[in-house]
Length: 326
Image 1: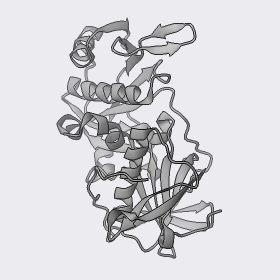
Image 2 (image 1 turned 120 degrees about the vertical axis):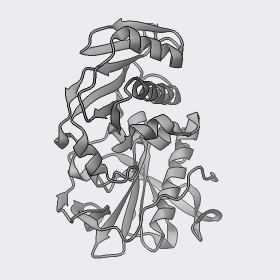
Image 3 (image 1 turned 180 degrees about the horizontal axis):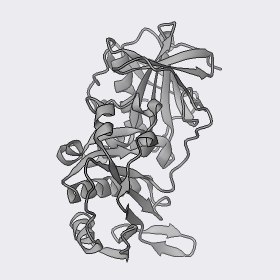
Image 4 (image 1 turned 60 degrees about the horizontal axis):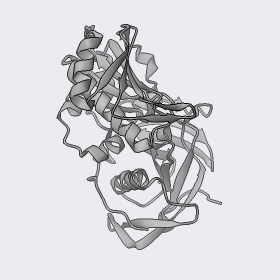
């Protein structure tokens, strides 16, 4: 089964120092991510479960307390993005809008889904834990960026879970971009289901094609080293939120950047094609750092090695495989 690259190789260098944590899965592994900073002992929370997100949440983060626009101003901005918009609730606590461009089909009829903006709240630093902070690959210094932030506004959708998943993702990406434009003083954006952090400038200035935005902003390819060995784990986090499988690799002897790139391409393929790969089927692997149809890697669905607990599509990289697979 062939697919083609959309993403360049990510900069994940072997020289970066590590933060350690332990996991208990196929084998007993000491796991650490490759991020800058002191080594900090962490433990995986195997009670944390990743489930389909009935409400997809994104957080705008601020250094200074922002002024939230009143509902009419937000509606005007939304109309520029979506067309016809109705104000459902003008309350500052939860300001909600019906996006009439879409229709969510329910047993008793169809209704437009809603996008919702919460009020300004204090941002708690401990709301993003050390495990998540170890995988902030899209900003130069995620910890420093988060430390500057003191306030948050959260965005989410309602009555959108029944939409076709690409429509829902399109709506949420447009809502995120519209909200960031409403707040020139926004510092950063935290895409919670993916554990992914961006500067507000990255959201405002990106040139990602519309159809690729969700994989770019809503899927995080994570990289971990297993202490005491040459083994590594790469997985994605974010597809689970819309009902698709994330992917994972347990390997040795491959360039990590090439595996991360492969993971993003597989995620893009699964998103584009509604996850057509079944257990036992194969996909194009890597040869000389590039996708190759001459190399076929077997896929199977199983529990994730790394938190949060979820079913993933494990990709066995042939001669480079590590660990034990059934």
